[in-house]
Length: 440
Image 1 (cartoon, rainbow, N blue to C red):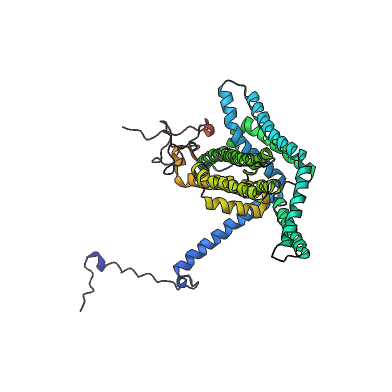
Image 2 (image 1 turned 90 degrees about the vertical axis):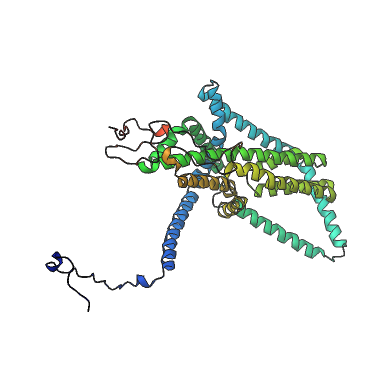
C-alpha cells in the first residue's frame, strides 16, 4: 500500500494544493482542426488586404485626372533628376539646370512626334490609295481561289473583323484610368504634369521628408529606406526602358529601310514611343511596319519585314530584358506579362504603361523592409550575380559612421525623446541621442 504521508515536516501542517479544474469548452474551438484555424486566419487577412487594394483602386479611378499626371511626372523626374544633379555639380545654377532639362526633354519628344506626323501626313494619300489597291487585289484573289469564297461571305467577315477591332480598341482606349477625350482634360493633364515635374525637380527632397514624417516615428526609418530604394529602381527602369526602346527603334527602322519599305523613319519613331508600353506597344508598332510592307512591297517583303520584327522582339525578350531590364528592376518576365495584362484590363493604356514600374517599385520596397537593413542605416543586400552591374536596383551596403545605432543596440531607451533616424535628411537636431552605457 502506498504511503501518503508527506515526506517533509512542513507538509504535515499545510494542506495539499487542489488541482485546477478545467472549464468545458463551450465554443467548440478545440474541435476545429489546426489547419482550419490557420486557413481562417489567413483568409480574413487576405480579405482585408483585398478590401484595402480595392478601395485604393477606386480612389485612383475617381482621381484619375490627378493621379495620371502625377505618375507621369514621377517617371519623368526620375529620368531628369540625375541630369539636373550633373549640371549642378558642374556649377550650373539650379534653376537654369532644371529649365534646360525640361526644355530639352520637351524639345526632343515634340521633335520626334512632329517628324513622324509630318511624314505620315505628307504620304497619307499615297498610303490610302495603295491600301485600297491592295485590298482590291486581295479580294479578287480570294474570290478566284479554290476556297469558293463568295463576296457576301467576304463582306460579312470583314464587317465582323472591323466590329471586333472597334470594340477591343474602345476597351483599350477608354480604360478606367483614361485621361479623357476632351481637349480640356488633355490640357489639364499636361499642365498638372509640368507643374508637378517642376516642383519635384526643385524641392523633391523636402517633399519626401514631409511624406516620411506622415508615418509614425518608429516606421520612418523603414519607410525612408524603402522609398529611396524604390526611387533608384524607378530611375533604373526609365533609363533602361529608353535604351531598350532605342534598340528596338533602330533595329526595326533599319530593317524597313534596307527592305525598301516607305515611311521607315516614322515607323522607327512609332516603335520608340510604343516600346514604353511593354508588350502591347511592340506588337502594335510591329504590325504597322508589316502592314506598310504588305501594301507597298508585296507579301514577300512583308514576310521579311515580319521576320525582322520578330527577330528584334526576340532579341529584346531573351537578351535585353533578362540582362538589362532584369538587372535594373529585378522582376521576372512572367510577372511583367501578368502585370501588363492586369493593368490593361483595369485601366487600359495607362494601366499598361504604369504596371511594370509600379510592380518593380513595390517589389524592391517590400524586399528592403523585409531585409531589416534599414535598422542600421544600410540597404538591402544585392542579389547574387548583381555585382558589377551597370545599374543597381538597391544601393550597396555602406559603412555606418560612429555615433549611429547598430542592430545590436535597443531601439528605445529611457530618456530618448525621438529615435535617431538613419538618414541624414531626416535627422532631428532637437532630439539628441541618449548616451550609451558608461564603462567603469
